[in-house]
Length: 85
Image (cartoon, rainbow, N blue to C red):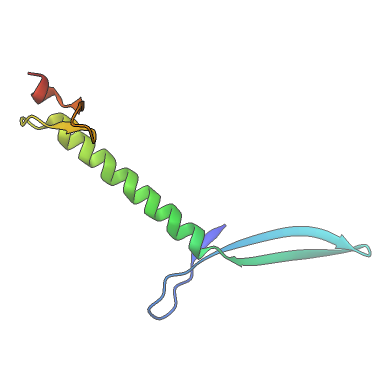
């Protein structure tokens, strides 16, 4: 499992894996404790970007104001329902 393990002024995430194994007939437990902060922070950034994009898309779709987007050559590439009306 993954869990936060923050230090003073720093955010960190770790992953803990536990696996059973047998060594010379004796049961053992192998624990792996891995710092996954970089991957977790990137995942959180992507998740926030998706939420922001969905919020922006909902705002554009429901506003009463016409909104159009253009490409670099000045061609209209999308418009919202208000612009269609």
